[in-house]
Length: 70
Image (cartoon, rainbow, N blue to C red; front, top):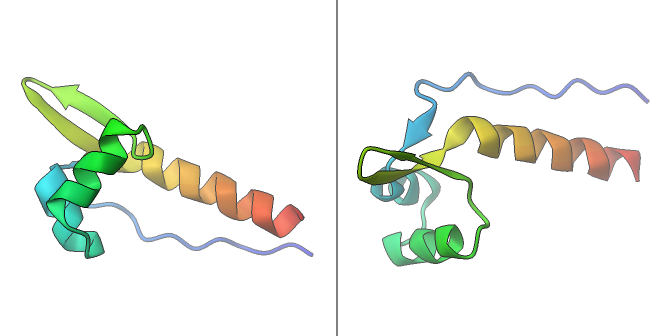
């Protein structure tokens, strides 16, 4: 069964942890905990650790494809 995965294009490739928390409905401390545990991909830009939305999107697509194969 061939299914198309439709994604919305990202406006920006990265997000601050604060903005990401707001966008997904989590507390900032929950996002920071997920970052510290390595659950959310990040990239350091200057002195800021940003959420890497491109890598997170890739991870989600890979997980969705893996779930469909099972």
